[in-house]
Image (cartoon, rainbow, N blue to C red; front, side, top):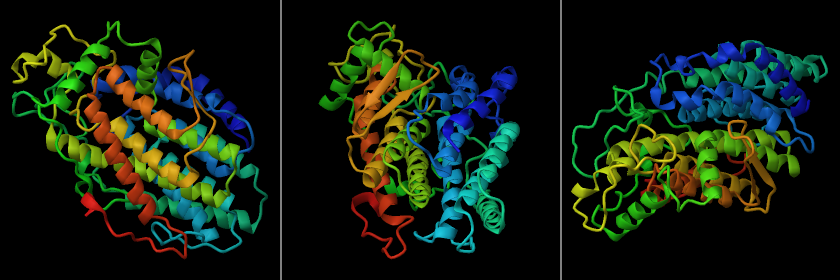
Length: 462
């Protein structure tokens, strides 16, 4: 089954239900009030996410793991970035657990799934992905069911297929059960208790309830032991040269009316405001593995690791964000007259190019999640060169081309600074944190059957 056929199926379903989707509260699965901070952008994402499959390069052939990774990406795109990462990790781990129960090439994640050697791994992968996604996204059931039927129709009927389906169903059920009380819901909010310089304050996009995803620091991780395992040092002091340089940069290039921001930096700022790590790096991984095919078992393993790293990076990000509660550039530039630094001049009219997310600035979430994915993918696929093309229906006319994964994360770092919502020091801290998380998970999880899955911890990994 090719992605083009899947895309056509999804597009047909979308075009008949776009009006309904665009009016839905996209985070109803979390049983929370609608979050104003993300509503403007997320009202576009249900339709854009499903159309996304039409923007995926279709050169070469894909396997069922790649196909369902694309379907997962389109399905979860209706969610905010951090629930996206969690759903992606659950889905891809279920796929891995199902396929690996048959191929037995790697150490399992749960270790509770058994299957006969001759069961169909293709049927297992499809059943696992479908089982997870249909559970969490019942409003997408008709589209998912049609695509699932198409997947199974390509597999010859018989005992191998039936055994594969049963294995996939068991893996999906086991992963769903394992994440039933993982701290991801209900959402919790944070209200600042101090208005001192440097302390995060609500920005214009925030709901009255306060900062978002306060509970995410307590979500059970997939691969690291805990969020506190990866703590960062504090952000730079407000009177330091590092802070002054970071302040001056974002003030100069991040304002909505900046004349110092080149058009290509405006493009990446807007692009990566819409495209988030799950979309970016799953797309890139499929392009890499289509150009240089890997086995079904390898793809199941690799996509699971990539999405584990992205999701755990979100958990560690919010641990550090709410540990330091550092202010956003928007607040800092308005209130610079009170920061004790005579080299930072205030601008009460500063307005960022893109909307400031409603949680503390340090470290950058986009920077952390993206660098966790980059580190994992470089360990799996090498440093390139690759041929990666990224586009989004949310920003027609802008297409980004990359030969190395580091070029993507460099653009993401620029995007948040030129977008006016992060200091460069936030991005640097996110890059460090994400790299450490990707490195740790690669060294410790889903190892080949004959490999030791332990490496002596380094530095603050204890």
